[in-house]
Image 1: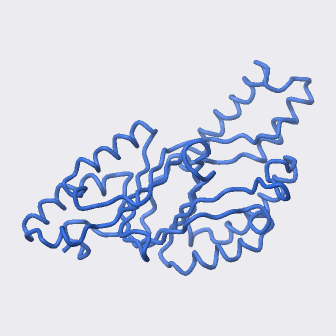
Image 2: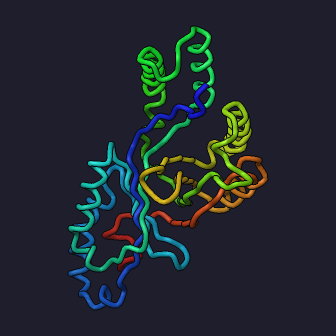
Image 3: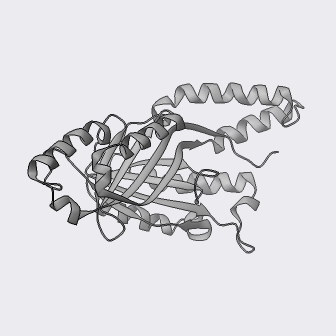
Length: 261
């Protein structure tokens, strides 16, 4: 049995962390600032984009973009850089990824069915059957593959890896065991359904980490509770590595939000 689980990919995603050049911004007249914000608002707060005020020293703002594919993400990034506002921003970091849904349960089922029929992995017949499964799953999961940015007050974003060291290596654990651990891991997240919206993005081959995690909620404290509880889960306790965490507060319409005024 192949060890690689099936995945489905959806929206391309870009996170941009930036600092505001406050000294230069404050030298502008109120009228000029209003003009710049009026130009930027349709781009930064268009459908599929949102602006968050970051807490802490890692940046001032986080610009989040969800688009159909990487071509549209590139177009969104270029549109931001062409804004007059960009002259007063300095990018400190960014993250590129794609919405990803893992299919451990479906993978085990279809792999076993194909092997029981004597169909060898990666043959044309095998690939045809796998694609048929993915087509059905993509149709059923379309809203999760191409989500809207939740309209919540707070966002928590962080990248993460699975360990690949000599002692603990996620990628050398058998499929069935990984499936078991992921199911137990997922049960924790389900207990927070309706309170936290989680969007997982894959970034293997796109950025420095393997996955990005976006959590959305109206109460920031729930991020601490959820992530702390997950630290005790086997998947996180044994195999997870975490990158930099970003906590942001969603901004209102740029032209009226007090942040820039």
